[in-house]
Amino acid sequence: MDLKLKDKCAIVTGGSRGVGKGIALALAKEGAYVVVNYNKSEKSSKEVVDEIIKNGGRALSVKADLGNPQDCINLINEAEKEFGSVDILINNAGIWPKNWIQDITLDEWKKTIDVNLTSVFLTSQAFSKNNILKKRAGKILNITSQAAFHGSTTGHAHYAASKAGVVALTVSMARELATYGINVNAVALGIVKTDMVSKALEKNEDYYINRIPIGRVATPDDIGKIVTFMVSEAAGYITGATIDATGGMLMR
Image 1 (tube, helix red, strand yellow):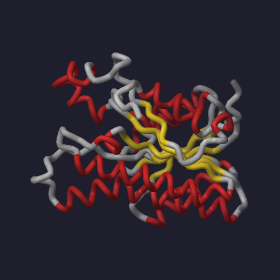
Image 2 (tube, rainbow, N blue to C red):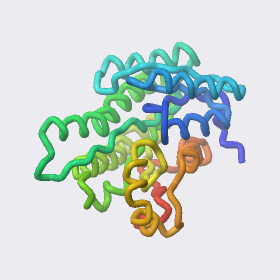
Image 3 (tube, rainbow, N blue to C red):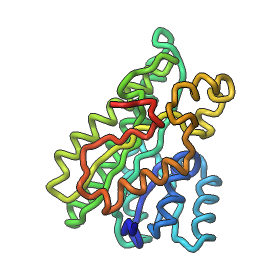
């Protein structure tokens, strides 16, 4: 199937490692130009870009603090300057902090909301303003979590709340932006084998595996393929949806 992503420009926030890297590489395989955003991981970001270029693709590494509105605008502008347009925004950047509800500090709470939710608002606002002004259609894909739907029993209440906010924001943006030809969807993740969750997996892998009907943990490549489909023309009639990519952990 031709996903018609050749020469489309896609920004992947937090694209230097884990799920973000998997998404960036999957998009590049389909011929998309990829902007790999990072905040602190410059070396890892450039390694992803180098891998894409080595395989015949085009990519750019761009630093941006996604909690800073001007940085988000600059991210869009840098991508457009390099590739001519910005067609796809994938909001992947996030953190997975652990603390129990009685112990979460206000600073921990605010940081989680800022990184996981406010950044999605700011980047999506910059992207949509740019594309509406230029009468250009587009796709926004937000990474959320199964925890948005069933909460957390493992000390991640602040994470679950931030990801539930992403789901609600996705639906609201989809309703507002459809008239401009901008589709907005989300993908809810379960357990993915990344550095962010590796310690939890090492401590109690059986606990997680036993909760996954498919019987294995997802890889970044698994998620990359799903996300790539969701931002392609093949999924052009889908907006406001959250696709469950959890191996069956979440069934709605």
